[in-house]
Length: 499
Image: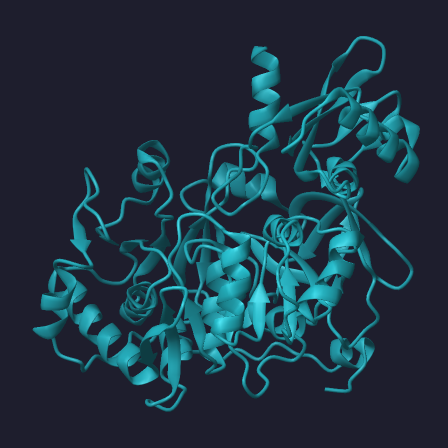
């Protein structure tokens, strides 16, 4: 600690060994008796899992899978929530040299089928039977299989670029695509993880996130890097985020670090919870906004460090206590990442950067569209100031073009949720004969009225600009979200087109 942003950037070099196995990295570096995962029912710790248990159980599972003929390059589906078996399944798969395919337990049958058909896993570890694929039920079958297997296993000598993981894009735009990552992915995530949590690990750090461990946010913004550093991760199974429950959980479990999606933070800000004393609060995935940032420091006890990344290249930009806060920005490029704007689009240099994916699984056309001229094109538009702070403008396909103005929806959404009656908001462009597109807002509130609609329009006019005022405001009970909590604007546009 104590280094400036410039010193951190200039003094950084990627140093990856010729042999690198992700399962070994997150499991075998710590004392066997050290706590790795704290399982809670929301009120107390009901199980404490040590690194020794993770090591032994992952070795046993690797032997179980190998006995079934599963080996290097084969896919292993993992359809499990926040529980120790999820970590064991990942570690075993990596040690085996196979490829992990995380699958959210919140997927319906169609969403699950799309991913299973694409990845073609040899087996899926799940807490329920899945149709059309060999499944190992972790509650009924797995305990017996592990008890009969040896806890001795020699991990496969994988390399940094050896495929380790297929993690599917959230579906915010278009059909989900499988982003294939190598064993190097954790190394690429570590600088951003450590800095977004103000030089993690520190003594007494205990981390938790409501984010599903099947997504990049839960898996590589929390679980894997925390295990790598030997700090406990809280595992809590829930089907829906409850802000009051989150307050209670953080207090009871003495959690010091959280990764919270912007939507979760806004929901917490909307209820009257106790003042907390977190050491760090990190958020990514969508813009949080200045008001929520200020609320975090006041009520959660820690400065909000927003960061930016995506499934294909995570934790590229962000904030840290080592440099001045710039509320509302995505932050600066974390050490090791060459991030530049190309025609207003955020891009990152591919060569030498371990965080960048290997390509889309069995989809060379999509890969070629994503990777051009030696850079990964994120599809996100931004602005950057003289100090290197990036500010999100919008997705290339979410931009609204109205009367010659190019308008990103994020800024308007952030403005709308500043109103005390609004919990969530989404903004899209709708066809307009005069302007090309007009702005329409979908607003979740407990008190819809014409008067509130007028107040919201006035708020946007006051806080932003006249050309950013929504032409229409529709009050809705809920918004379509991906399982990782991002707004599905594409679905809203489709609804409007049908209407």
